[in-house]
Length: 275
Image (cartoon, rainbow, N blue to C red; front, side, top):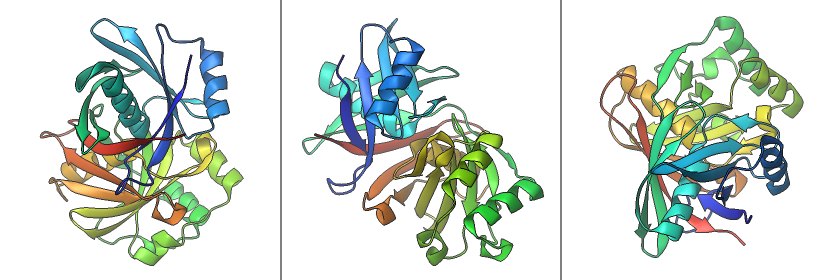
């Protein structure tokens, strides 16, 4: 079995978030998938095997399985396109059924996923205070026009909108404390964002709860964010997320919320093969 290494959500042919992709006749045992994901060392590795007219898919981070991963789905879509041709593929996850559309763009494979349904809910004052302390933020550092929330688009994220770009650039936290706090609250990432414009959002995603300090492109968080913006009435049109710049891994995610409260979100981007 060969693990492909593919960077998703590239920006001008560079950067992107690396993911492992393993397409096999049958999925390996759980402990073997966990071992492979830890050996690959990327934030997620996607494992896929044919099932019916589509594929059964599971995602593993270096330290644990996750229910859904956007950038690994985009990488998988590119791998499926290269192996079987451009088109749509149905994917059965642990907790949802989604799809990914593989396409070619100027010699590169891209993919557009349709996420699981989305939702959001208020975050308690106690939880918010704990995460503000983790990141060295004051309540006044948060954006006044967009409340922090717990949002889900296939995986759970804390969305922390910031008032100024500098606060995003200066993101730092204690890894062990962050891992414990994220695990306590069942979070895949903490998504810190700064909205430059309605159609342009900058993001950084802390991912310590699953063994990675920072994720350079997070499709699942972008889906959760888009669902929140649409359903709260803040914004319902197309937007881009720029992420990974501070890590030297610039990434671009194209995001479009489908119509209807709680509806899925489409997230698209280009990919590149890694050595």
